[in-house]
Amino acid sequence: MIVYTIVFGFIIRPRDPAFEGSPWLYALFLFCGVLPWTWFSSSSLESANVLMIHGNLIKKILFPAEILPIVAVSSNLIHFMFGLPILFLFVPIFGKAYTPYIFFLPLVILIQFVFSLGFAFLISSLTVHFRDIKDILANFLTFWFFASPIVYPITFSTIQESNFLRIFLNLNPMTHIMQGYQNCVFFGTLFHWKKLGITFVLAIFLFILGYYIFDRLRDSFPEEV
Image 1 (cartoon, rainbow, N blue to C red):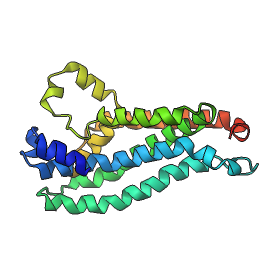
Image 2: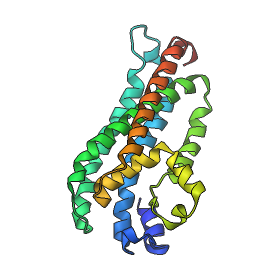
Image 3: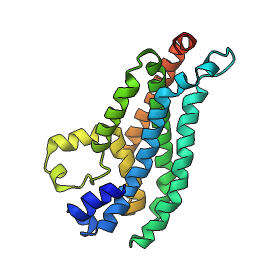
Image 4: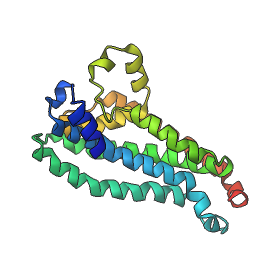
């Protein structure tokens, strides 16, 4: 995050009016996105390898394999929760004020948890059969990071002037999750409840799909790990 702040905040300088030309406000905005993204990306990368690392547990007949991706996501959620007080501390320090919309933050966290868990079930089960997924995933997450409004706001003029970029970003579920954090903490406004609501429905669908595939492949885990 320090590197992004130096490059985009001090060298390139933030051009969006929301930052008022201040690199420190940009750093706060960046923190609002990097913190939850770290939770998601760390959970995904750990889940991609978790079944193979704990293969000795998988081979035990009574061990519920779904515990492993759940632990991967939940442990990174705990790390995320430890980072929240630091984020909350910097909000008034950098001149932003809290609003009642901060109380909607748990809803955004819940949506990300369901989405991350569904993605973890899907990735962990497929990686057992297709080992290259864990290598491809790291590069895919890097692309996904820059394809989400984390180092830049979605209100950026270049995005607003391009129909393609707006459609592309709106089709990305992490766009609306990241905006949820940014609206609740940085902007102090209500998130776009329709878009985030659709993202929640998508997260539930991904959770059901991920667990279904995980359950279907469960019997093959002991042989493959």
